[in-house]
Amino acid sequence: MLMTCVYLCAGGAALMYILYRWVLPSTVRQYLVLLWHDFLLERLLDKITGSTRPQRILRAVQKNATRGDPCSVVKVGVYPHEQLLSLIFAFLNYPTTVLELGTYCGYSAVRMASLLPPNAKLITLEFNPESAAIAREVIAFAGLQDTIHLIEGASGDWIPKMKERFGVKTFDLIFLDHWKDRYLPDTKLLERFGLLREGTVLLADNVICPGTPDYLDYVRNSPQYKSKFFKSHLEYTQEEDGLEKSVFLG
Ligand SMILES: C[S@@+](CC[C@H](N)C(=O)[O-])C[C@H]1O[C@@H](n2cnc3c(N)ncnc32)[C@H](O)[C@@H]1O
Ligand SMILES: [Mg+2]
Image (cartoon, rainbow, N blue to C red; front, top):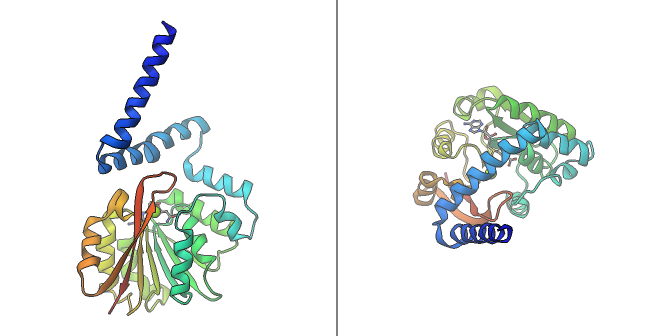
């Protein structure tokens, strides 16, 4: 009886894996991965540890990184775009004005700021107060509070105020990594408020999973952009994903 149960469970698990890996279309698979990873697994970990994911990230940074050393902070997590970011920063001859949409816990902000030349400025926007508070602590731990300017608020509200509130003329690099349905409207806002110059690079994350079809269609077909896709994979998974690098041509 026990062995029959074991065989049935093993057979069921194998069948589920085959269905998941080879039968389900990739879009369904991507939704399942996001549902599992960003929702079910996180809720389970929240319950078990009595803490939220941002709180766990901050604790991991405080425990495993060295205060004042941004590289040690970045090493605490998995960052799939490490090499590409370094290449793009070199290609741009080290940008001095960078905007990030979607800070979360400040991980990519710390990564990018650690590649910036002295006197450069990185503005990052986050509308979730809990994430913004954790990001502030992560940024301070890395010793980058003078380079990274974290704004708590929604991109749609802040992009129009960038020039008057922060004295920004145009950005050299913009990293789009917030909610995917905002990529296109925020790009149009950046255009409308004159924040792009000839040569500004838009780097859009997760354009396949969860995906940003309207944004991709826009930057790939507009004569104002020269766009190129870089294959990658979704953070912490093997699911196919990618970044779109689009150079504004003016
Ligand atoms: C994928 S996470 C960012 C991850 C971060 N860039 C990193 O790699 O470490 C997306 C974040 O964008 C924030 N967000 C989403 N839409 C936003 C908006 N319109 N304005 C500001 N923040 C937004 C979410 O609260 C979330 O924390
Ligand atoms: Mg991302």
